[in-house]
Length: 432
Ligand SMILES: Cc1cc2nc3c(=O)[nH]c(=O)nc-3n(C[C@H](O)[C@H](O)[C@H](O)COP(=O)(O)OP(=O)(O)OC[C@H]3O[C@@H](n4cnc5c(N)ncnc54)[C@H](O)[C@@H]3O)c2cc1C
Image 1 (cartoon, rainbow, N blue to C red):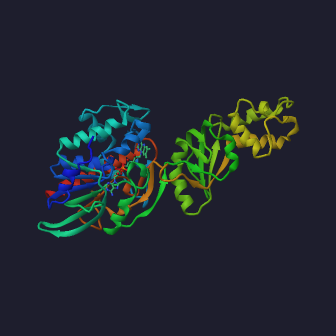
Image 2: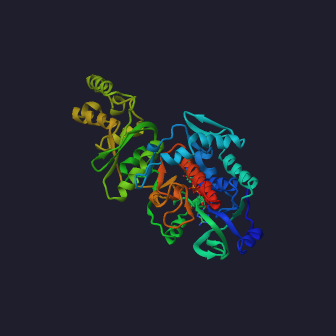
Image 3: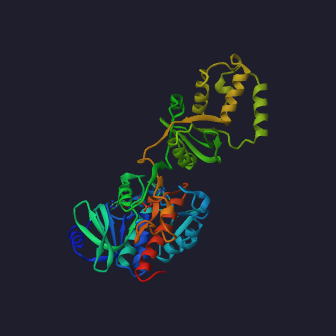
């Protein structure tokens, strides 16, 4: 993997050499952009704050890198302005993504549509990028953070002057901003490129954490902390209910987590920011149809109640979940069912199908996998070139595009990176 090129790097960064394309950020979108630019003949430089490219990639998919999904479609994404992404995916699709890797000798496999490298090691993708970039002649400078970019008049027309935190600089005809959003700052993406984009004429839709645990101020939840169970979760924001998500729910000390929670978190994050009341409605028995459930309730209520509540409700939900539902009524599992009125028993069973968790916040950016918000897509053209600063391109999570969990965000990073890289290189020689 690329290590910090101090000596060489500093020399590159103080010369008057003008690169065709400079890519700021060596994450998923930046590496793909640099590959596309280099492979299209552009003299390309990557500047990366970490000591190697692809550091966040190594953390993706629980270390396995879920790099795309065979079921990607535009409905799996949120864009700030409701922009249609289909034209971008038509230019670099899921199939193009699969072909890209397999043509480079990185074999893949899928589990129910979720695609991973054959090795099941995310580092394979990061290391493959490093290898591909070097083979394509991309210059990689790591361990350096870009702090300012300005467009100036050079000998050959307008060029960008890129200044680093070390005070060194370099020049490029085209710049691709690929510094990611604000999610996962521990992997290098600290949102610093929002400021640079602003200085070049862009606005930024408020970045918020997404694919993130949800926080609740409901102290009773702690009674079920540690539970992992199959559940269906419906997000309710104000008066509006969203599509239910099913999967493994995790109840934590501070709220709820797990894939179905991640899937609703982007909408929850924005609704909370708008000051709406947000609630997650949990169905702990998602396999029951309404008819089956009515029959089950009847059966339980007609049984002998001369037993503890824990026994009366046995076999329906996790013991800790039952403790939580009972706690809401100041009851304990040891109490005799016969001592509890029928309406209360019915309401406990109703809660098993639609327990409402008040959502009062989200985890922070350190816990988030992506950012919802960012630079509006409407401020770029079909090649992802800025419509506010000619020669500037934007890619990846920096843009106000976020997908659901399951390979969708890396697909966007690769799609947008490839389009920006190829376009930046193509325009150098007079367009695509
Ligand atoms: C733990 C975790 C797991 C995830 N798992 C998956 C998954 O399995 N599948 C999926 O599709 N998505 C996953 N994601 C989301 C996915 O990783 C991101 O959406 C994607 O990496 C975004 O790519 P990017 O290139 O836009 O930004 P990033 O990957 O964040 O890369 C940005 C790069 O720019 C660099 N940088 C930032 N500012 C500067 C600067 N000023 N100067 C120089 N360099 C700079 C950063 O160091 C960083 O390397 C996961 C995210 C996390 C945090």
